[in-house]
Amino acid sequence: MAKSIYLAGWFLVGCIGSSIIAWFGLLHPTTSRLAIAMYALLLVCWVLCWLADDAIIPYVKAHQINYYAALIGFACAVVLGGAATWLTF
Amino acid sequence: MVNLLSNASWLKTNMYLCCAICLWLAALSPIGKLGKGIALSLSMCHAVSLVKSSRELIHQEAVALAQQAMQDELTQTELALATHQQETELEHLYGVNDGTYPAEVVEDLRKSLETLVQEVQPNSTSELPASEQVKSLYLAIKSLLEAGKSETFVIEQVLHKKGRSFDEGKAQLQQLLHLGIEQEW
Image (tube, rainbow over all chains, first blue to last red; front, top):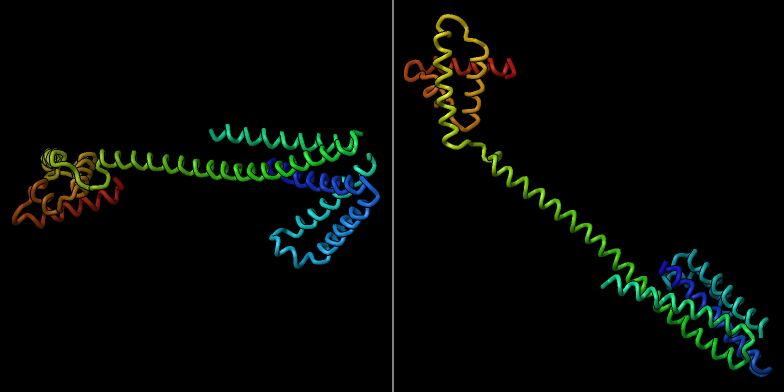
């Protein structure tokens, strides 16, 4: 139970973080570029994590399946947080 | 005390979870740009606290599990020790391990054997002794031998075969022992 709350907490951190970036980008047209750049940076990092999985997995000492689940969960959290904020702004 | 601490940690964690979700949902509602910013910031603070708190909770759960396992182990060891102590006391009480009887018991055995021999001997001169009496004699001699007495003691003190008739007594003893083993008394 504690472990599931811990994972839900990290998912919430991802959602809220993405919402903050989206909120910051929607404040003014000049800040939107910065927000898009941050999202692009996140996307590049995410793709790099997929490509360099064999090098990163021993470093983070996680199981392969858990690593991929974390990447997918991170993508879902970012998309959910960003889309929800963008749609409701 | 541990349970109280654990309950408090659970309550705190659930509070952080509820606050983080509610504030994030509030930030999605139409409350203005500033309101959204404040709600998102507070929500982020609660989410970070939630992660920290749940990490502590995982640690506490692991410690509680380990303590429970150690408690079970201690209980089993205590039980085993108590059983061993009782067994030792019983062995000491009944003298299972020392292999000898007290002097009074040995004396009683000797007397009963003498009585048995006196009862058997008149019969043995004429006919074979009654099987029950022979059996009793065999069992008594066996007990005496198991009590640590030598064959010489049995021959001289019980069968009363001293001096010249010692060999005869020895043969009688061997015959009796052989008979007892054969009959599986």
